[in-house]
Length: 378
Ligand code: GLU
Image 1 (cartoon, helix red, strand yellow):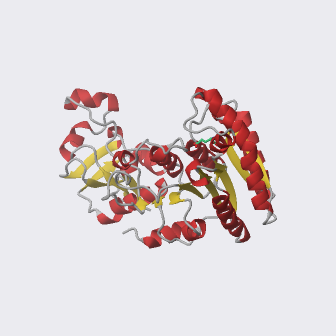
Image 2: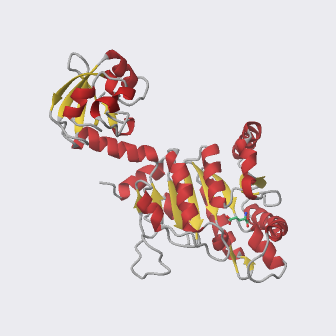
Image 3: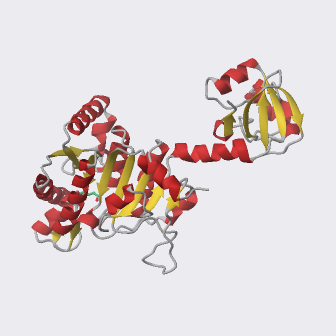
């Protein structure tokens, strides 16, 4: 059972954090909300004092520039947005620089586009710069380089950018600060029944469907892009928290393991709990005797079990049942969920994957046990 202890366990190992702050948190009718910025900067300075390494991905340039120009309503064209970003970015940095300066902290501006990261050389340069800034204890403040970014070289939203940078710097956690309390099971603006999810073990289609694409008038991404960002980092083995950016002490409380926002568990964790379930909760319904080649593929190469590697079947299990893979002496090697029944496996064992359909008249899967459903027995 995943409890609040799970959250605490994950957060105690965190040292390097990427914090993403959305426009909806930082800006309001009056452009940049200086009180909120100060509140967050104070908190980040406190984290630094506690020994955390922190990097920021921050929006707010366009909203700030737009306010500067006295423009109400949406900006109409891409060049207008880019121009507003160019105006606002300087102000955004000045505010951060002054506010962090009160704590004796320096900031560095990093503006990135997608194409910077798909180019291997530039990617390495960026990573080296970011890691040097971290060594120097300087707060890197990252935003999309809106001046040059259009369409295919654009991240599109800062959630995507934040997820990418989280992976690049090997952060231990992405905290995505937003204007809502976290992920709700339905749109909280439309339904009073909406419930906040404190923990998401795995980002399934159902979870994705809970998020709307509707962004507020100042941000671009909406919850959908936050979920996609969470998906990207959790797939990488990094947890992500979507939390309310204006809540007082949000960062301290999140890191103390208090139940705030929505925590998305890293894939490794998911696999671990799922594999725990396969290994310890489910009772094996039969045995698959495998040959030396398959043994090597499973134990040393991280591969799935194919029909060709099976020499003998024991038991009478159905599709989806757990079975134990044993070597020719009967020593258990692995346990997993089978894609074919015992009767089917008896017909196709020893065959090449390409021959399965000929024998069975169908081939729903290439593997007898897919790697994702397999646990090695140590
Ligand atoms: N880069 C934009 C800005 O700083 C924001 C993009 C976004 O909100 O995702 O205003």
